[in-house]
Image: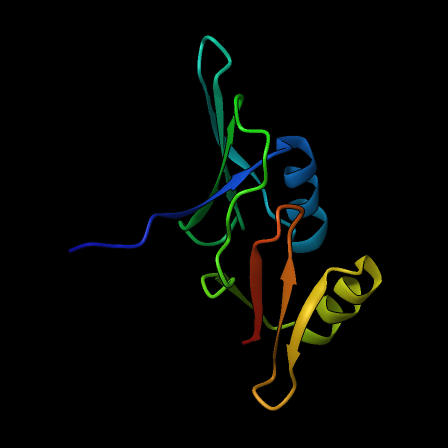
Amino acid sequence: MIKFNHFNFNVLDMEKSIKFYNDALGLTVKREKRDEKGSYRIVYLTDGVTEFTLELTWLKDRKEPYDLGDEEFHVALKTDEYDEWHRRHEEMGCICFENPEMGIYFINDPDGYWIEIVPE
């Protein structure tokens, strides 16, 4: 059997990204890897419920933003507190697209990645 393990986003500012994912989605650091020479840092974020993690990768030599294409790829999270999270995301100013007909919306992180929020 094969199961999902993690999904990766490359980030330019690890601390800013960790704070965003904690504030916006309640994700916390599960584990971390660092290169001895400081050339990379990998942080795995967890929702504390499922085994799935979001991997954030920071590369020391990367200075320019990542090419996100047409932002068609994304990770989705579901919640049974949809309205409360929507209010929080409105207050944070991070909602980048809404589709009321489908009952979903997207937020974007500090690097421009889209995260879909769907109701339980």
